[in-house]
Image 1 (tube, helix red, strand yellow):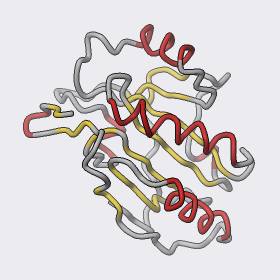
Image 2 (tube, one colour):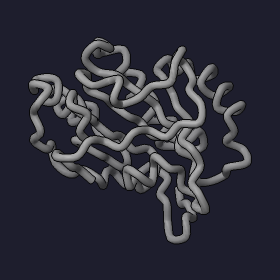
Image 3 (cartoon, helix red, strand yellow):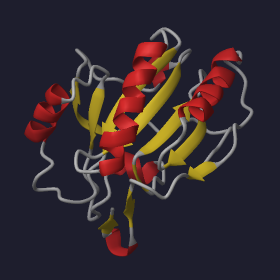
Image 4 (spheres, one colour):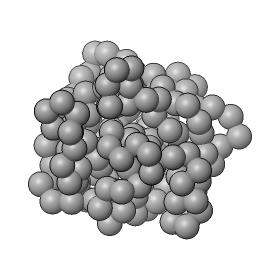
Length: 186
């Protein structure tokens, strides 16, 4: 899913880690946002997505690119608690802000994940300086491809609205997908 005319939906978060105050996309205008959605039990998130988010955080100045993690639990709800996430963040030394996506209402898929029509984890969303959704990618994305997309967004003036293209389907390896009836397959 990629749009260039609409503002990215605001994040619906029950709790934040690694930040002193709640984060809003409106408060991040003027900076590019890389939103990495993950689950603690998603193999592709652990082997590719979270290390990539960590590299982004180290490589780019926070005044230009903000990296945010969003724990989007759509399966195994009983074991992926906020307490378990707190330990996970510490053990994996994740230093960027991480929010917990609010549970869905009568739906196993969390609210922000629904609003962005994300298909599973890992997913990476890029939001431009104007707050517009510019790229949504499900699955693994190569570092060079992601770096090029971020570079183009950083080079644009805040008012630019051209789309980077739809990359909703990524590599079929190491990802957890939401299936019919909210049933997950990894």
